[in-house]
Image 1: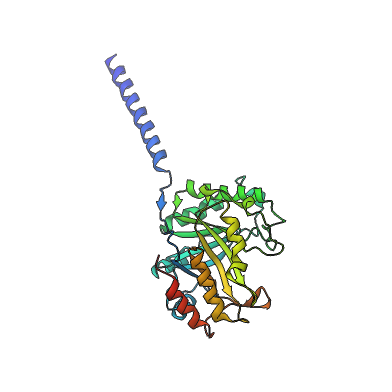
Image 2: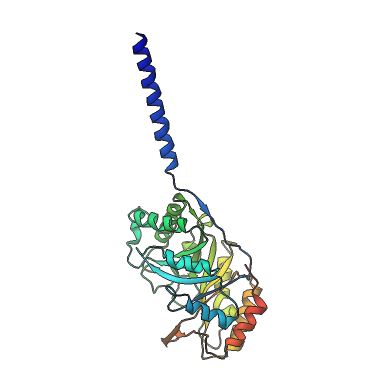
Length: 312
């Protein structure tokens, strides 16, 4: 009887130990949480898009030399199902730069995103961002209020976009990737764009900053004509900080004056800063040579950066 009692006690101890270990392992398997926040300090961000970056830092270095200021944001576009570019992020971090990624869902079945059909991809991306361990700016489906992208106005209903955005943020949070600054990016108000921006708004819980893409296309453009209507509409539903997330001044105008107008307006309206689209394009009014290096307007850009922008 004593033997049987000892055996029973041993069995119960073993079962309890297994249960505790299983519970402990289950608890330990929960992804770690990584926090890394960017400062919301106004007029503290200078960013750039550069051809050839990624993979290289050299174009960014050339822009920094032109501006006499190292950018603290470097943007690039990532296709749907592409992994997080960890090697590029590591290189940017070594130079004191935060990577800024616009994930473009060109190949995605949009309605399948909130249903969880792409969760394995999203979890993998989130895990890579979390393991990177430093701040990352991520946008998704930028310029959704415009009609030119497959996820944009007139193609994907605003409520479907909102559901997808919220689901993506939720997946990242569940994977512990709390080092993401979520940038909700809209296009400047133009003929043909959707006018009710609040319809695409995911809510303050799911957005860190608002991004506005806007360009000086014509010599008559001013900060107010490019950004004013959009900023005023955004301010009707959120006080989140605003970054001019993609901007430039066309070459066929008084760039000295227009660059000054851009920075003055940004200062007056309390923007976080700007990301210059330093890409040479051609063929239409919306595709001009936006590149500054080698242009006489370099001096104006350098002057206004020094005069207007502080350090983050």
